[in-house]
Image 1 (tube, one colour):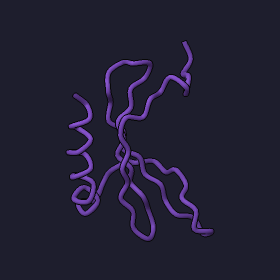
Image 2 (cartoon, rainbow, N blue to C red):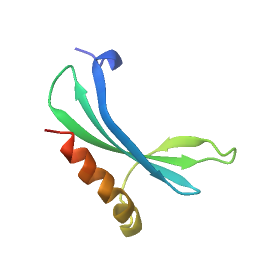
Image 3 (cartoon, rainbow, N blue to C red):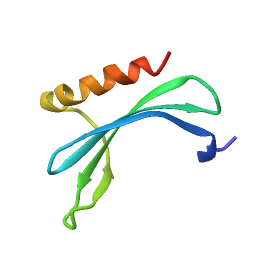
Length: 78
């Protein structure tokens, strides 16, 4: 069965951003299933718009900034 965006329910989403990037912590449930945490990265392009980027590895300062968001997201996963 292919992915159907209409079945993907966003239960929580908060972001941290600086002048060059935005990290978003979200909780999703697909088709009423298990709640799962998602972390995404967006980088600002030359026009000032955010564009999706590979998350890859996080620097310590990034982890420190999003850790409270992750802890809040975990409470939404019960």
